[in-house]
Length: 418
Image (cartoon, rainbow, N blue to C red; front, side, top):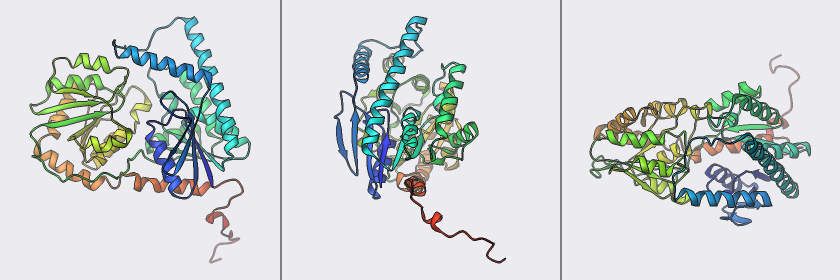
């Protein structure tokens, strides 16, 4: 059976789609991922168990060049994390350009999707769902994998636009044969918001491929608290830097990654010897390099519903690296950390409360206990366990004209003991 997965990025750092594609390929499906071509990628790439095909057009090449220019500028000067104020004319031009990008993306992906002639199309994020709806009209099966609460991703989105985006997503979602999402909180919101069957939850768990380190509270004097990932606004990273002023001796915070507020964070950290910055590592090394630390941190701010229900990849990457975690007191993060006794939560707006959680979890007795609990929990929160849900969901729908085992069973005309 042929499966085409569609995604709007270039598949360099999309660990969720990579895991899904590889797992489906390992289980006998012929998998191709359609995505965008950028300056750092090739038009085709063969990965274990699946093929990547990247589409390119003039507008996206132009955007890619512009983004590289902005990244170059950000290395030489600080970039504000506040929304940029623009004139009405400039705003209209940007809106027109975004519309043109969407149209060219859709046309390019629809053309490629039709050529592949797959049985099932998996649309990752709402940006690709328009392509999926077109393929649905051609009689194909469609899966919508909602990684986020799309209308609620950004705190500065006007309410009227948020409502409009919600209506568009709700309309498109009804064409999907099945909806998948990242946790039960997002699933409940999508279900109630759009009046659809409850989505299948497939969490962002990392592969359990890294050997677990034995518990050793006195492995070294210094405790390293790691944040790895994109340095962007609304992730509470500024407050993590400020929390360094309140940490006990022997604790160091490491930021591993890059992003639009990187220089701002470095400026805030000036003079703080217990706050350091490192370059990002390849996706294949994220978990093994995280194991160099002692504690992981997830500090999302509850600025949007999407952030409140956040299910960060890094949370599960920390667990697979064997790290207890301190995280924002948000529903999903709280549920994972406190129910399994593998970490502590804090108020992400309060640097002193962040420091309190780090100081407590870094103490030998607390650290030893939580590290042992991580060892027990990491197998339940592994991709090897979670992937069964994905495989079950895909096998249940099948291509058009296919009937699974449940459908092949004869229907009883009366109760068995009538």
